[in-house]
Image (cartoon, rainbow, N blue to C red):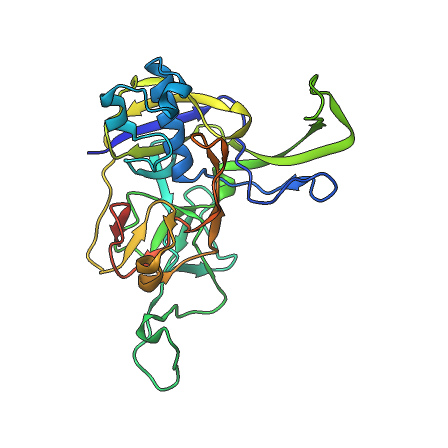
Length: 316
């Protein structure tokens, strides 16, 4: 069972990358957007605690009702439920990640309104003496000239498994824009938390375009209201979440599986990966320990495997 939610931020959202922001070294940090699935899971777990009037100290010391622990897991442990997505909702359509086996001609002609692009799907290279690598028959190749990967772009959910060669594609810039926010640095050694002299920090925030919402699914029914406020990301950014109807995920029969969310790199995923983009490294804040989580590598959403790694994968 999966419960689906939409999320509309009140303002910008801020999810920073893994770069340090140490005095005298770095004064900027990259942006991560859309947010990783585990960040959304953490926000939902926090919302459950807040809505059920459970103090964080009690949760950390495991003085918590059994039904809450069953729903969101123990403090310091991984979430017992998964997050599908996030996706983007724009107008009457839902936009999900493009598979990394899709390619299209660079600067190809598109219908400006429908964003139709002709898709070239890469296929496995047959066994040949011309290609002799450790990957063997896992090598895929897209036939064409001047092609670019559509991994990182977004496709209408109704079209991902259709046989049509032209599909509606949106780039990230069609769904959200980046904004540079510059602020002062605080002197944390001063109890008054005064400004640190001569130090400014600039970070990149994301602002959803007009009419765009985030959509995600939680694979467990959670003891929380059908709508309310959800704090998501750094700087206590918040917005309205709202439970929505079921999202039907398409399936086909190609024998290849695309992950709808980021996927932790492990032995199985590494062995069965067919196509992916740049590996992403995420950490986060451990509420139980009160310290940063160790960095971990993830395959980006849209990565393709020749085996169904988990329930976040759909067959293309």
